[in-house]
Image 1 (tube, helix red, strand yellow):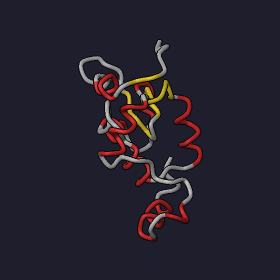
Image 2: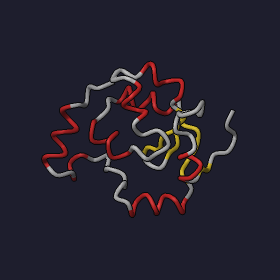
Image 3: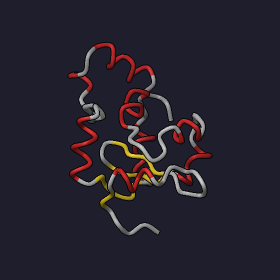
Length: 119
């Protein structure tokens, strides 16, 4: 059981689902242990495994997920990315996509709506 709640990018990278390690991902600066969810993901576990040990925010948001999926994600949250690594992630272009779709470019807004019903 994980009791620490502040993780570095390096710590998350070690949880890549390989060699018996758990599968952790980062979405919007939060860290999730999705090991037990891989086989339940409607699109297949390999979609999540592609981001094991890494930040998957951009692709998670680009695909668009239903409110049910967003609520389910909360169940797997184990902590947050530490402050210094949040800044590194933002420099690499993985900053969070705004919740308010009205400020997104038209093309990105329509892409998010197209897949909004994905579980």
